[in-house]
Image (cartoon, rainbow, N blue to C red; front, side):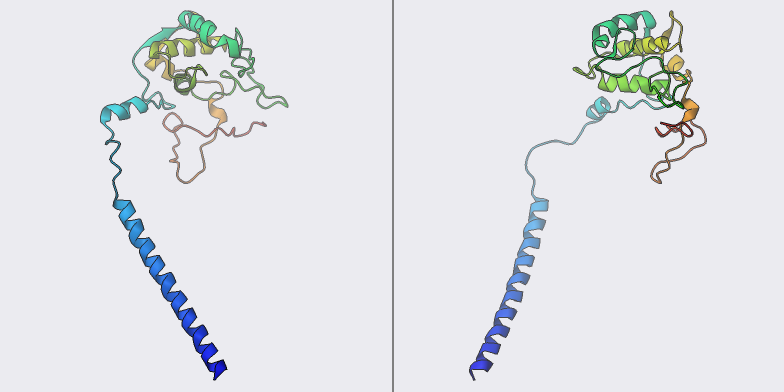
Length: 210
């Protein structure tokens, strides 16, 4: 009789535990649904004006380049004030990356990646400078200043003349030396195109040893 009572007690305890777990799961689901519907009373719908402030992407073919222009001479002055401390007075590098030279070195045992030797599209150089430089105050330069610094860096690499003035149209027309050294991004979520002016390429050189 004692054995039977013990067995029944264990069965009852197991059933009771299952019921408690089921109740707990149900309560948790109900609380989660209520939490999902809860509103915290702060924030507001994003406005078109706010979206524009963040929509600063410039694409490889020059789409979304802003109005304005800048000269190599103007860029040299700004570069000396804002960039030379890290990148060297002539883009030779320092605490920051080397920005000039290195042409023809990418297939060598010691590739030198610079604006002139490695960068594939001139418009995206504008994008990077405007977005991330100077390091201590990114996005502090005006569009005209960014055009000017871009022009100066391209001049340091022998890609534009000393008297050049760049704007959206002229910057997009520049073909960088390593433009054809890149391959399309093979990931399935990235659209592919045979026209490299419409689809930015991957940062993986096709045949160059890195």
